[in-house]
Length: 88
Image (cartoon, rainbow, N blue to C red):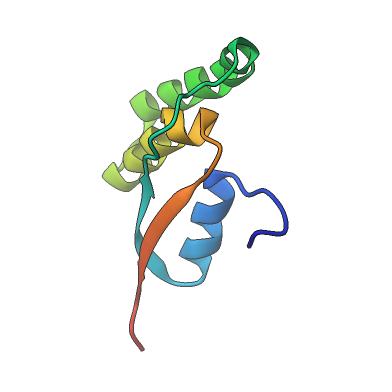
């Protein structure tokens, strides 16, 4: 998966469609955002996700929007995600 950049929502959907659960986005120790213009570019996504957290109906949906609006997802350079698979 290193060929093209993936966003957190894309990875979440991919993993859920293939039967993974307990999808967690891990924080990486680095300065976020690195440049000032990144704050301006990431602000609409942050505000959108914050609004979606308030309107979410289920706990799973709420946790997804919290992770999608986190500083690691919006401003991070790397996405470190873990998930557990269902055993057949």
